[in-house]
Length: 352
Image (tube, rainbow, N blue to C red; front, top):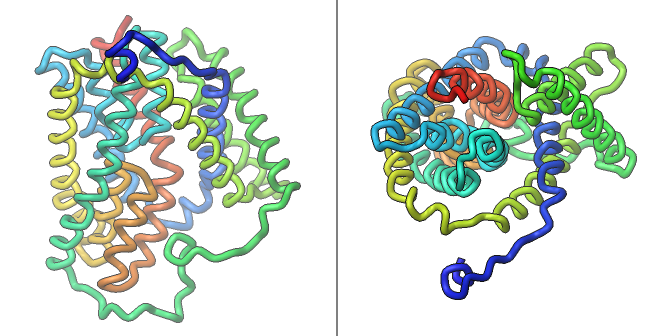
């Protein structure tokens, strides 16, 4: 940015791998979306999914509404809504690419990265105060961990099946199938009412592939290996996306974007207190779930896990929260978010 502003120099990088890495990341999200685990979570997971969908709708309504009031492109409101806040950097980069190509929204990638980064920070900052407020209103446990319970993987990660070269090859093959079939599906749906971005098609192919193989008893996806490769793809993709940012294109949108994000942060805190906590039972588990929701409702699942660990380390375990939040925040949020965003894209204001 300094070179561009001072002497007019602009550095360009080879981005040929950026899009394949993005698609590979969404393929891993789909491959890890185990529908049987959704059933095993029972009513709690179902209710929490409803709560999450409510927040997605609210975030987009706030974003589009404020963007319209300030005379901005409604796409700006979507980018400052569930796309980046509940979706994170990966989802934000994917949709911003579509907005640039189809709607000629200059600076969409810069807006998406800035909003996702802001949300990541604020999701961690508000989780603690919200949880402390709710814990005081809940019946807290005695703080003594239950050693008779088997801790969840996110509470105390354990080492099980090894990630070998054969496992990596199998996982890469599954990702390649998702990318190939997903692109074909996206081309078939192009121009129809059911048209979806390529990364969404790839994600759904991953869901169908992993659950289909598991249902037939033919092969069970090794979730940890898929997660590792997904994190690698996301890290490389984000590195390329950040290197290609043109921050000078963001200057005129800085203040309006900040205003939208501040309102979104306040809305998230109020939603966690008055909706998430109440819908999930108004107890200690609900308070921990609300802290986790602040984490991935504004940032990402790791932020949600960090929020919940900070609470449970002080007040005691919440096995329900550590079962539900990673399941919904890491897997199902991307699926329902894609559907909600597609629903908003059908509004007349986004018609070409």
